[in-house]
Amino acid sequence: MRVPLTTRDFLDRAELVYGDRVGIVDEPTQPAPSLGEVSWREVARRGRALQAGLDELGIGEGERVAIVSHNSARLLELLLAVPSSGRVAVPINFRLSPEEVAYIVGHSGARVLLVDPELEPTLKGIEAEHRFGTGEEYEQLLSFDAEPRPWADPDEDATATINYTSGTTARPKGVQMTHRNIWINAVTFGMHMQVSDRDVYLHTLPMFHCNGWGLPYTMAGVGARQVVLRKVDGAEILRRVEQHGVTMMAGAPAVWNAVLEAAADWDGEIPGRDRVRIVVAGAPPPSRTIARVEAELGWEFNQIYGLTETAPLLTINRPRAEYDDLEPEERAKRLSRAGVPAVGTRLRVSDSGEVLAQGNTVLAGYWENPDASAEALEGGWFHTGDGGTIDDGGYLTISDRKKDVIITGGENVSSIEVEDVVFGHPAVAEVAVIGVPDDKWGEMVTAVVVVAEGEQVTAEEIVAHCRGKIAGYKIPKRIEFREELARTATGKIQKFKLRESFWEGSERQVN
Image (cartoon, rainbow, N blue to C red; front, side, top):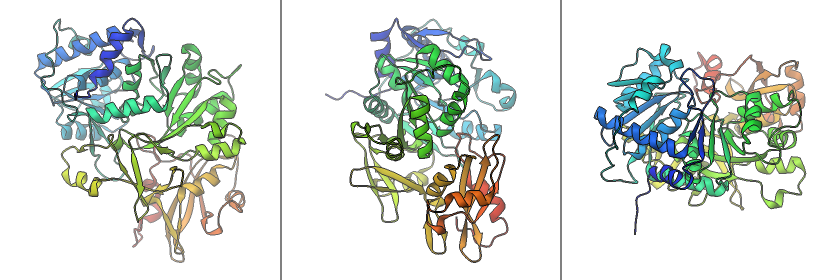
C-alpha cells in the first residue's frame, strides 16, 4: 500500500495525539496581537479556518500564498496549513528590499500576500490580488465558519513551498520543495536529533529560511512545544531557555556567538546546561566557537550541512560516544566537520572537487526556470557548488564555496581554513578571507577583519598569529579592518561585495 506523504500528516497527528497540549507559544511583544499559548487542537482548528478562508477567496489547489513576516505563531501556522490544503506557501525573507519582495511575489504568481504589520510601511507599494496584514486582518480571514474544501487528490510530489534563495549575485531562484521533500526531511531530522514530545524548541532560526529548516514540521509531528522568538538577541535567548525549559535550537554561528557574548554577563548558572542541544548550519563554525559552546554554555553542539535546495538536511555531525573522552580541542575539531550523510542521502565528490548529492530531499526544480533546474540536477546528481572532501569514515568536510577558492602563485587556498586560523586570535570578532588581484601572485590572500569590541590588534600581530599554523602562502598578505561585513539577508557574508572595491577596474575577474 502506498499512501501519499503530505505536510498535513504532521498537524493531523499533533491534533489527534497531543490536542490538549500547548503547541505554540507566541512572541509576547509584537505589532500584531499575540496569540499567547495555543494548543495543538487550536492550531489545527485555525489551520482549517484559514483553508476555508482561502476557499472563499477562490484560491485553488497549486496556487501560491506569499508571506513576509518576522517569526510569529501566525507564520508558523501558515507554514503548516497552507500546503496541507494543496496550496503552495511562499515564505519571503523579511530583510529583503521592497523591490526584491515585489520580484518574488510577481515571479511566484502569488494571488495572496500576507505582510507583518511592522513591515507594512516599507512594503505598502507591493500589490497582490488579495492582501492582508498578519494581525487583525489575518484573523478576519479565519472567520469563515465552514469546513474547508478537502484536497481533491493529495500528491506527495506536488509543490508544497517555494523558497527563494538569497541571490548574492543575481535574481533569486525559487526552490520548489515537494510534500515528499519536506516530509522526509522532517522525519529524518527528528530521527537523527532524537526529537520527542518532551522537547521544547525555540525558534532562533528565521522561519522563512528553508521553512525554518523544516523543523516546524518535525516538532508538530511529535507534539513538541514550539516557542516563537521574533528577533535574535543573545540575552533574550538565555532568558527564554530558562523561562520555557528549552531543549533544542537551531541557527547560524552568529546566533551562538551572540549567546556566548551575553553569557559573559549572565548572572548565575547558564540555563539549559547539559540539557540543550543546538544545531548549527550556514557556515562552517571555527573550532574555537564549538569548544566555547560546550565549555561555557554546557550545550550539546551539533552541525548539519545542506542547502535550501535540499530541504536542507544532507549531513549531520552529532557527538559520538567515542568523543566522550577526547580533549576539548580534539572533540571540537571533529565536530567542526560537516558530518556524515543523513539516512537515505548519497554524496560524492566530482573530479573537479564539487560535492554532489542524491536523496529524497533534493528539490524538484527551480520555479519557472528550467535551464537552472537542468544545470543543478545534471547527471542525476544535485550540484551543490561547494568544494569538499569525504574521508574513509564518510565524514564530509566543506573546503570552500568553489567560487571562493583563492589561486595564489599557482596554489589553491581555502578561505575557510585561513578564516579559522585568523579567527583564533582573541581580538578578532569576524573575518572574511578573499582573493584580490595581484600582478605577482595572480591573487593575493586578503583578510577583512572586524575587531572585537574593546580590543585592539594590528595587521602585523594577525600575521604573526598565523605563522606556524598554516603554510606561508596561505597567510594573508593584506589585512583590511572594517566595522562590519556585508551580509545577505539570511546572514551569510557577501564576499562578492567585499571583493568589489578590490576588483574594480581590474582586467581580470578570476573569481
